Image (cartoon, rainbow, N blue to C red; front, side, top):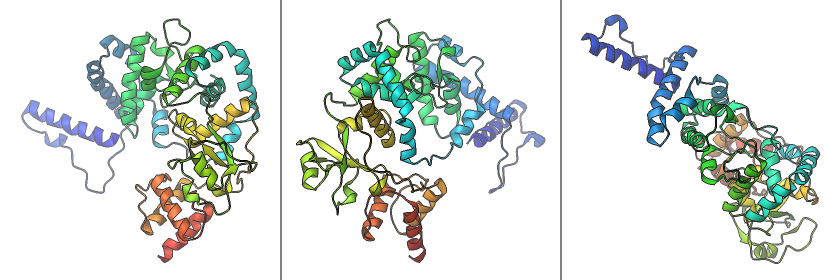
Length: 425
C-alpha cells in the first residue's frame, strides 16, 4: 500500500507541474507500470517523506476532534517512522506456542511467588479497590502479572511514534488512528509530557497495558491525587483495571469456572464458549467435577471450554470468565488469569494432563487445513491461517461425519486425514 501511495503522490506532482508550466514535460511524464510488473519499492527517504506528509495531513483530523495545535505539535515534533515497528506490524513472529507452554509461563512458580508478594506489599491498595469494585484482589494481581510482569515489562516505545507508525500505513490503520487521537486526548487532559508516554510497539501501556481509548472511557484516579497515571501509580492501575472488569460484568462472589470431567460419549460439538446451558443441564448430561463429584446445584449459565481439545483438560466456565475475555479476547489469556488467581489463593492446580505430545500447526499447515476444508465444500470464510469460528465449525462437522470427537481442535493428525480426504474428493 505504501508503494501505491507514493506512486500516486508522484503522479499528482507531475499533474501540478504540468498545470504550472502549461503542459507535461515529456522527460517528466511517468510511464504507467505494465500490468504484472512489480512497482519499485520506495526508498527509506521516500518512506520518511510520505510519513511526514501523513503527520501533516493528520493534524487537521486531530484538530477537528478537539486536539489543540500545541498538543499535536508537541506530540509529533521530531517524530520519525519506526521501521522496526513497521516490520513487526507486517511480519509478526508466528504464534505456534501450545496452550500448556503458555500456561507454564503465565502460571509459573515464580509468577505465583511474585503475585503473593504483591498481595502482601500492596494489601491496602488491593483491599480498598477490591471492596469498591467487587473484583477479587487475586484477579487484579493476576492481570497485572500477565500483562506486565508486575510492571517490569511495560514497553519502552514512544507511544506517539508507535501509534503514528501504525496509523500511517499497514494492516492496523483502522485500529491505530483512533488510538492516536485518544493518546493525544490523554496528553491534553492529563498534561503528560510526550516523553513520559511509553508503550508497547502496538500502543498498549502502563502496569496493566491499557490502550488509549480504554483509558479515556474507563481509567480512574485510584489514589485521589487528581490525576491518572497508569505507569507509576499502582492504585490508579488497579482501580482502573477493576473498573474495566466490573463494567465487563464480573459478579462478586461468583466463580469463574471449575475443572470438570466429561462423560463417555459426550457430544463434543457442545463444548463451545458460544453455547451455554445451565449447570443443572450439564449435570443431567453427566458432567462432573474433575474428581468425580457433583457439580454445584445451580441454574447459572455455563459453557464447556476445551483449551486443548478432547485430549486435554475440560472446564465449565461461567459469565465471570467471559468478563475477562472482554479485557483481552483470547480464551487462553482468560484461562491464565483465572488459573493464576486461583493459585494465589492456594487452590489445587489443573488436575487433568495436557496432551504435551501434540505439536501445534504452523501457519502454513493451518492454511493447508483451511484449503482442504474449502475443497471439501465447507464455508470457512477467509483463508488466512487463523482457525476461526467457521473453520472450527467445519472441523466439527468433518469429525462428526468420521466418528471422531467433534471438538473442532486442529491437530497434525486431522491435517493429514482431511488433506487425504480432500485429495480423493
